[in-house]
Image (cartoon, rainbow over all chains, first blue to last red; front, side, top):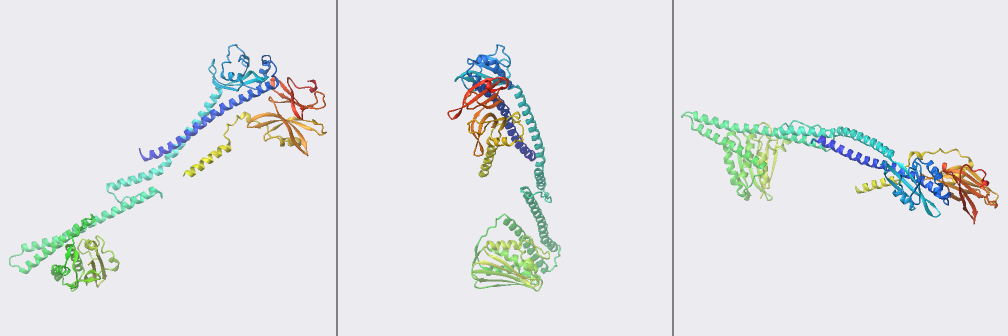
Length: 461
Length: 168
């Protein structure tokens, strides 16, 4: 069942219950009102008649006076008036004595003869008409000498009750109808918002994240709309990032591949008389470009591992001076090619630290690689390492183009590549920082635009 | 939450109590003449009666206790709880204020006759009240001052208007 039907249905249920309860109460009250008043009027008349008899006629013979009494009693009453003697025998009847009535069997008459007020409501035995009768004892000389009985037909009463009830029910139905229609309109405002949200969510499920939902009210539905919009925006952003990343990575991968391909073709098609130097240069470049490719792929793998939280360090004792020398040796050819000097200064007092050597190597190569990217020819790169207050400090300083102060905070972000669209995935620093953090260390950059950059790494000793 | 429910419940019960839980009477019984402009004497007597009472005329004056000052016999219709009752009272002026010194119940549907007369010739006036019972006739109550109080001495039915009371 749609939400519209549910909301409208609940309105209907509420008003229906209310109206039914009120109707029941009203109809029962109306019936009670009429019957109660009929009985009361009759009782009143009977009481007046009986007290009059007692006051002025008590010493006299009832049968003898009954005619006169009847005219007195019945003049003020529209009901049928009967007078019975002490045995229940009918003496007078305002409807006329036909000789066939048997009132002494009536429960109210029996009670009155016994000295108490009797009331009876039921059907007249002969005509089956609904009637109400009240019998009052006629007392004289300290005993009950007979009774006066007032009988009224309830046909008209019941008919009136039915009429009133019909009107009440009809009004009730009209009220329910009006409120039901009102409920349908009222529920629209809620269900419309929900339907909009539903449509938007469906569109997003199909992949369209550009859709936005209008916020109609400042309630829970409004909050839901806001959240949905936010989610769509975030997903859209992520999609964008992903696409950018893919195209960037593809480009990065292609560059070394092109170089490798190019040089292999060159070497293959070179004739036998080519210099040895060409051979050596070419193979060297192929090797370093392959390394670069491998590094890129590693970075990507690390990135995905990091996103799924799977990087695990394998600490072992590391001799920093040896490590730094190895790294320098590996990167010196490239540095020479770029005419940038690369030097290592490792203090003798460096302690042996617990670290994952491969990861440290990865970080340092990344830093030197960055420096090589941004340092012009005739510049220099200097790798330092020394102990400091229980920590080990490694610093990579270059005389490169530097980083603007406002960009300094962003360099560690994923995919950030800074000015000048140079190669790389943009993940290097982000991964490096992560590695250092896993070692419980810290990484920090000092830089000045146009002068150079110094990257500090602090590791626990 | 509970407190609010209880508060509402008490309010509803109070409404019932104030409104009265009784069944309303039929429209016919709600008919009644509007309040008349009463003359001074009537107003005085009305002030002695309960709320909603209607003074029936005539008011009879007579000296019933022989103090030289007239007392008054008033007959009125009480309307308490929509139950109409006929009553009669003897009012006496004590220290500049009228006070009801004796009251009795009435019968029938109305007053046919009220009077203060010495019917038995003993020098002490009796109070006569004739109650009307429609076509069924009337009934006469005769109250006599006996043993320092008003006692019902005689009741008898009669037809038609009472002529001279001494003709009883």
